[in-house]
Image: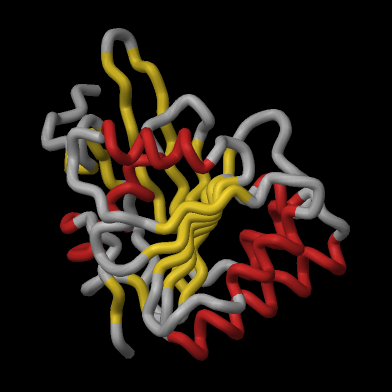
Length: 207
């Protein structure tokens, strides 16, 4: 099975080369975290369509340009209007072979009626398999998680769960991969440093 790199070397090594082609990944993270760096790194790997549902396309493009780390040059489209699910579906149908798709954030689509959202995810999964591309759904954790998040987690082939905590004077980021369909989930979390890039935190935890 061919693997697609995430752009994060340490993660790709842990995942035996990356994510299986044709997969949908859910990246679940706190709103007040540096999870956006994962999306920025992904854009360096191959052509990317970035669908934004909350921020404007200009805001996303500006953030990419201001990022001191490496980024690609994704096509950014704002689908956060009156019919976000329809707008996203229309753009997904035109994705070329082997492309990345980023939906940031998926929460807006998750607030659609369950049958319509389920149909969207099934169509997306079929398109990813046919084009051997990679989708990352950026989902926010917190008190207002949409009811359809369970459906997203079930349909996703891979789940990245980023946990961000403030521990005294230190910000601790740990990444769990509890689900990996067609591969090996990680038994332990990875402690990360999220600054200009996503790197491994090599500092020792002192009990």
